[in-house]
Image (cartoon, rainbow, N blue to C red; front, side, top):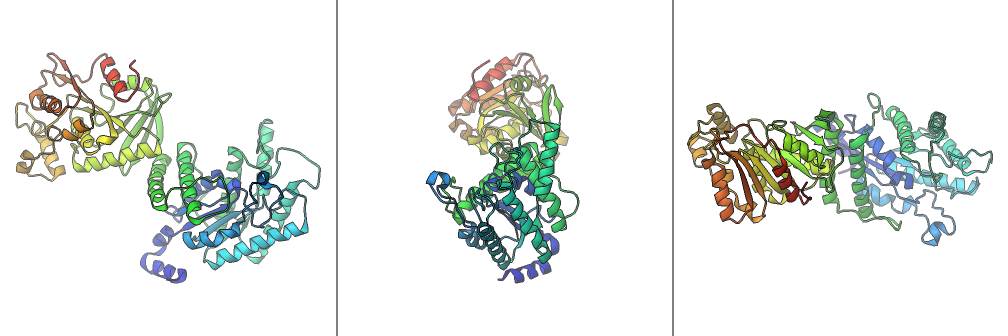
Amino acid sequence: MSRWLKWVWIGLLGGLAAASAEERVAILGDSITYGGRWATRVESALRETPRFREAEIVNFGLGSETVSGLSEPGHAGGKFPRPCLHERLGRILEAFEPTLVLACYGMNDGIYLPPDEARMKAYQDGILRLKADVEKSGATLVLISPPLHQADQVSSDPQRYDVVLDGFAAWLTARRADGWRVIDIRPGLKQAVAEAKKADPAFVYAKDGVHPGDRGHDFIAAEICQALWKILDLPGTPSMADGRALDLLLKRNELLKLAWLTKTGHQRPGIPAGKPLDQAGRDAAEMLSGYRVLCTMKTSQWNGYERSDFVVQGVKSLLVRPKQAAPGRPWIWRTEFFGHEPQADLALLAKGFHVAYTDMQDLYGSPKAMKIMDQFHRHLVSAESLAGKTVLEGFSRGGLFAFNWAALHPGQVAALYVDAPVCDIKSWPGGKGKGPGSKADWDKLLAVYGFSEAQAMSFMGNPVDQLAPLAKARIPILAVIGEADEAVPVSENIDRVEKTYRELGGPIEVIRKPGCKHHPHSLKDPAPIVAFVLRAAGKPSP
């Protein structure tokens, strides 16, 4: 189907909403673009608009590249000539099928020599060919002038290379009269650098005279966005990501860039091979989901530690960060009652652990809760780079979540610390044994599981029923319980788990508090809990 006909059908079937999902943005350029920093900042701003929220945006930048096809003698110490975009452009357009192309060339096209008519013509011919090929493919092209050269060195030499780049930019901007979409970043970039140096005389735009630092990329992205919003008639004012959100989007940019460069091919040595596109696409989708979470994150303080509140797939969640993360970025996952008897969590924060929680109130370890936990775990591992294996911390009914998720994902669990845990729904909230149970919670549980009373009574998916996967994985369990627990009777819950787990060969330790009922949880001195968690996570004991 031709692209024109495809867009007609999109308009008929879904209008603008469907069209926005079809946006595919290719970003082309040399090493400054390949670095990903201005490209990612522009991407973050675009994703704040309805049109580009779901767009596929890929950085195809390539170090040393030109559109002119020129290369100076002995480039890269004689290892290879400069690659030319036109060697690979056709493959990019065919494989990626962009709807929008942003192209920033010129820095390498004069091959760092004084102004010259022949080199100017080679640059112009390369840009003309780029424009013809992109527009023939059906995409919109936006051309961006080259950034600054030696912006930190004041020179009165009219032959300095930045004059060549001025000439490239002047030729580009003159083409606006012919309807070309052109962004000249150079005037605004010069002003931004001058203001930065005025505010801080030690400011350096580019240490090597070519490749900007982070603030330089900020300046470039700001100039591009300001003009791009007008060219594309985008709503509002561009807003770029920063902090953890930007860091994650940069990782995503790198992932997709290398995957697509490998897929479409190039002639530049030294570029790492990327993942297969299908795998990269799955990872990128996970990262984009995490990026959106990070963009809405709210930060506060919890007991002297930074607390981040956010929403994952519609579920309220939080993460408390240590002042200095321990090697491997370990974490403990409180499955219920965050903040209650927090002494072990606080001690682990001091040891470099993150503390996590996601709100699964009234889900009682059900399949719905397991899906929420899957999403939360993926987010923390992908977006926060936490360890793949977590320590699950199940207080009371939180034991249902901890045991059930561990049974499903034993390879992602380092240990379980459970405290007065519910291990059989018949005991609590069912109240079918020694304890009183909870009629209100029993009714909610039946509803969330979709059980009749009879189905609940014959259910074999309780923690006491599915310990084999945990024992096979040799997951250590620590239980802290009150021997006189009236709400979650020990004989119906942890005693059964301990007996079965030992028979299966699993490592388990139970700390019994004589005369203690269901409350208080934990230990006044959490040292035994902390030592257990540190051992399980491969850390030295305190």
